[in-house]
Image 1 (cartoon, rainbow, N blue to C red):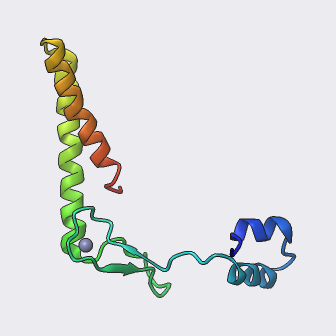
Image 2 (image 1 turned 30 degrees about the vertical axis):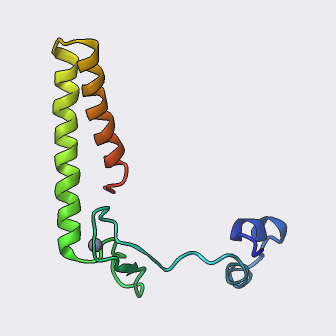
Length: 115
Ligand SMILES: [Zn+2]
């Protein structure tokens, strides 16, 4: 099994940047591409780290970035409204559990939408 970079560094600490680069080359390689950061992306396209110029992309296209921004914003607004109303409105225990479920689902979804 190929060791992790952290393991290689711990077991054989590099004394120069050249040695550090060699350790990295011998370690498990970090991915150079990822899936689009839009959880609802349907293209299946991978996003490459890039060529070192500019900020690395997280989305396969501008449409996915805008869509993810819009969905994240909507979920955050929904959460704010639901939290406020859940704290102030009366209802049965069953209704409260239902509303708590609505809140929990949005919090869960938001975890997959990067800032
Ligand atoms: Zn995408």
